[in-house]
Length: 173
Image (cartoon, rainbow, N blue to C red; front, top):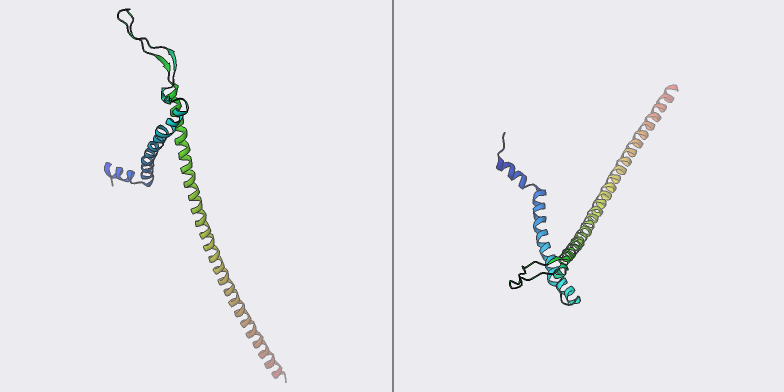
């Protein structure tokens, strides 16, 4: 049977991994906005205050000063040539804070998951121990029953032998 494009697309989009990935991307985007706001609105103003009120993104190394146009002197305007390292520093701080935040969140999630797994493993081990104890008790009961049956058979044979000996002895007389 030939499947249609839309049926294939529906099958693809409803796979668990795709949905999980989509949720992760949306949450990651929101998390990125939160951490960017933390950097831009809280941390960077504090750093600017420490370094004399300059915005970090304005930090630069001027290689050639800008020249303003002066028509009377016949000078044309030239733009400033500068290495703007302040924005680069801000992006590095952004990255480090986002990476640290993600690390902390993932560490908390992994520890919680490990605790859940440990609890599940302990429960599974407890259930296995209980099942093993029940199986041992059942095996012991079966062994006891088998031993009792063997003893009963042995007793019956001993009784039969005794009767046969009595019969033999009585025939000899």
